[in-house]
Each structure stands twice: as structure tokens, then as C-alpha cells.
Length: 259
Length: 316
Image: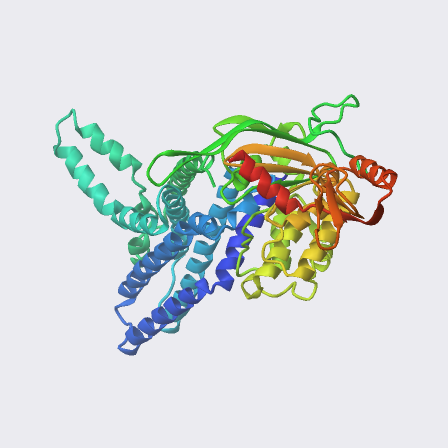
């Protein structure tokens, strides 16, 4: 059977459920808040505040979209088990990996659509007040979407290991704290004994480096040049490898799990 | 395939036909809340021939659902094997031939029955117009033709069970595995389901189902398997069982002619009970040769329920 069609069917189911559950209303409300905030800024005059406005918008977009991705993906599989909707799915002639991957793609689709809606609303609000968007903002959007794939993979992996609420909490800690943890681990690496130092490097390597995908601050600064293609390529490779590792861990747990 | 029945130990018959289901020494265990291992199924072995309709009976907690879950590959057996059409039951190829209805049928609350069936149909390998037509036909068949666009969360429990039945029939499966199939259905729904199952049976579909509704089992099944505490305690062909359960009473005027016959001292009528027809015929001949008047012959159909209770008590 065509695997792509299976994954597409599962992902479409997740997306449809998410739309009907009015998850995207949350996005609309957040978008409204962004527009109102931009309006308030515009009321006092944007002149000289363009970079600040864009930086703020990128931070808000990044934060909201990551939260939505974690909450959506983290509850996908546990809810299937809790609501007993899993049985008719696993009774079909599909592998458990197909099920997991299809659900993951659905989670990514929801995260991307939410992010793009927020981006569109933010861009609209800023353009009303005459803030110009440079091509690097498009790169910001693209890289952020790649980062959301990693976020979804981590959340899905954690949700197969622990309860949904624990998985969501852990995802927040890991994904929002990873840049802070990385800085600490690099400092620890530079000052630690040579025998212990590699240990810090390994931990740092295991942590998801989602901050690498966030060029919001740089994109807000008009002096920054476009990100070179090779950097985007390297980040895409990282995204694929890290997400594959997370999905493999999820599958290792889920493939023989008693349902 | 019509009406085909194979003996219960049907593995590889002379004509090369295989069993629909073959369970060999199946053991399923779970880890309890206190960390101890609980044996849900112990060395269970049975087989179901292609085209057979088999009822899987047992009290609550007997291991029925565990057996079905193991058959569907939801639970890894501790030991033993489940084969469906000669292949491991967890394999994708065997699952493509199975239609499964879980005990508690829950479906995505924010999808409607048509979308639900479309999703499952696509996972079954159906596409496009063929899938749409089949989904609509099945929804009409289970009486949901007018509710195809109503969200699942707005459907009653019985209607959801109908969605479940429809999804289990997607792709015209060769084997139907139904767990507590009639739960939540009203009498009309049960009758409709019975009709569907009889129709599937006529088309040679093998049906294996667990149920507490013994009247249903009696009407539909070729054979019953009774399980208790994870072990198979009895296995009977329903036709034979019915004739075995049948009792006969002979009423005549006069003194008892056989052992166990009781006479009403007021009316002088003697009633004798027999387990089989030959015994009855012999008794009638005896009564008539003694010059006594036969007043009545009564046939009492035994109930499967009574048999089931006795089988469980005997096993205990």
C-alpha cells in the first residue's frame, strides 16, 4: 500500500479534528492580541521603532507557535489511547510506525498553519503602520517552520514515554530552556576537567537546539544579510536527523506497547 | 464458500484450505497495578474454519478481550501464536483481511461518520469514488444514511456502535472479529445487525465474536467456545448442543412405568422426563403395552444460558 497516502490520510484526520475542535480559534485570538498590540504601538508612532516592533513580533510569534506545537503534538498519541480511538486505527493494515509518522505529520501541519496565520496577521498589522518586511523575514519564517518540526518531534517522543501533562511540561522545559542549558553546558565544558568535559558536550548534543532556527532578532535588524544557503542546508539536515532520532525513540517505545 | 463449515481442528485440510483463525497455546499476561503479573489467557488453543460463525463466550474477566486483542496484535502474547489465514495475526497482510469492532467503540468526536469511514477506508487501501460509494452504502446499511454529516460527538451510543459496525465492514473483510458486538444497540439495531451478520455469513465471511447475549449467539453461531479464567472450558457445535439440551416429558394416566417418573396422587397422572427421543419412544411403547393412556408429550427446548452457567460452574 502507498505509504504516502496512509500518512496523508492520518495527517488530514489530525488537521480536521484540530480545526473542528476550534484549536485555531486560539491562534485567531492570539493574532488579534498581536494586531491590537501593534495598533497600540502605531498609535504612539512607529518612527524609529521599526526594528523593535519586528523583534517583538518575531519573539511573540516564536513563543506562541512553539507553545501551540507542543500542546497539539504532545497530546496526539495519549488522547488516542485515552479516548480508545486507537483500536480501529491499529486494526488496519498499517504499521505502528506509519501511525506514529502520520500523526506527527498532522501535528506539524497544525503547527505550520497556526504559525503562518499568525505571521500573516502580524505582517498585516505591521504593514498598516508602514513597517517594511525584508526578504530575510521570509527566511525567518522558513527556518522557524523547520524549528517547529523539531519541536513537534520532541513533544511526540515525550508523549509516548510519559503522561500527556508530564510530556507537555517536559517539552516546555527542554525546548524553552535548551538555549539557556546549552550556554551553561558550554561554559561548564570550557572550565571542566578534561575527563568530564566530553560528558557536557554529549548532553549538549542530545538537547534540541531549536534556538538555531530562530533568527527573529537578526531578521528584525535590517543590516543583517540573508542567511547563506549552506547554513539553511545544514539546519535542514539537523532538523531531519534530530526528528528522525526522536521518531525512532517514539517508535521503539510504541511498536510493542500493549494497547 | 456458501455455508462452508470445516471441523474445529481445520488446519490444512485435504483440499489445501486453511483455517481462518488458529490459536495455539496462547498465553497473555499483564502487569497489575501492584507490579505482579496477571495471567489473562493461559495455554488457549482453538481454531475457526473459513466461513464459520463462532461465538466466544465467557464471564466478565474471563480473557475474551485479551484473546481478541492478542489476535489483532494489540497485545504481544507471552507465548504461543495466533494465525489468521495462515499468517501471524499482527502482520499487515492478515490485518488487511480482518474487520474489527472493538468492545467500546469510540470514534473521533469532531469527524462525521462519512469522514470517519473515509479515514479508515484510506488506511484500508480504498480510494476515490470506490471508497465514497462503499462508505455511503455501509452507512445506509447500518441505518445512518441520514446522519452521514452529523458529528460523531452528537451521535448516541447506539449510533456510534453502528459507525463501528460500518467501519468493520469496510473493504469487505474475509474475517470479522467483533468484541461485544451488540452492546449499546436497541432491539431494532440488534435485529438489523443480525441480518447483516447472516448476510455476511451467506457470503462466506468468517465471523468470530464475543458476546454476553446468548440468544444472539444461539441464533447466529455454528459453534461456541466457552472460556473462563483464561482457559477454554468447553467447545460445542450449536446444532448438537440444541439437540442435547432438548428434554421430553411424557404424561400418562396410571402407575409409573420407569425410574424417576412421578405420579400426582390427586389426579393419578404420572410425568416422566427423558433426555433423548429414543428413550421417549421406548417409554411410550412401554406405557401403551401396559394398557395405559398417554395424555401428553411435551418437548422442552433447553436454554444456552443454562448450559453456559453450568459449564462455568463445572469449570470452577
